[in-house]
Length: 101
Image (cartoon, rainbow, N blue to C red):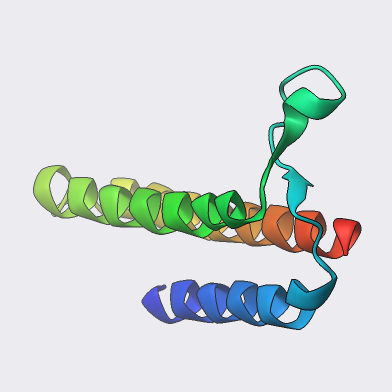
């Protein structure tokens, strides 16, 4: 699963590197806010997405090792949760970056 996390980070980095020249100075990052300028954030705040993804992955794995090291069922649930986490965060990042550039 760690290799998948590394691959997702590389995909996000490559997407950002390829689209960097065409990125506007502000990106629509805060979709929960009302439509308009309140949704916009500086371009570098898009890096919060991979930071959050990696933090949640590490937190899930730490909790699994500390609390559920003997439970195969809990390990499977956390494995699928991490898989979903990586897929959703990577898809959102790519969609935001490619949509605005």
